[in-house]
Length: 248
Image: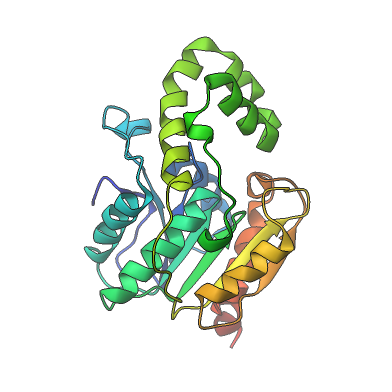
């Protein structure tokens, strides 16, 4: 399998394949806890961006379009299966971009889920990737106060900050000239305590899908899904029609 994909669960004849795309600074292992809540006939794959975990020695890619191209090619090389894309924060933008590329190749996803991120045409301008370390870390802690211990450690900060800065550059500089609507259903997941995305911005995802997106709220902050994987996964299964089919 491509180094771009980490197989958290892979079987010979899965009913569907869930592919998760992490947030800025995130890695594939972020989604490992989902295994405990996902039905056994659904494979779980997580995207592994370069520069982290087993790809630590690889160069970062500070370009979202390039990331999307690599991820799409890795997915197209897999055996055909019903595919669900789930992207959180920066991963949401990538899920959309990858979804468009897969549809262009004739292998579109069955469903796309975008979490905690505004659509690209409603993303406010920012240049945090150009700011000093203190400013960048302050923005991280504003979204995830529980990460304070990690960023207070000088050695860990030296390891992880270049990765994070590269990811910030990728999302902050991504301004595609043409935005196509996805043929696949696209749904939005938000948290009540997350100030990163407004309801107005969430509704604007409708411009990028031929279907009317479902907007679902969860308790918590920007990283709400860390604390409640079960209800998040249950929602994905309901929206992808897995649960309805299973009950028939």
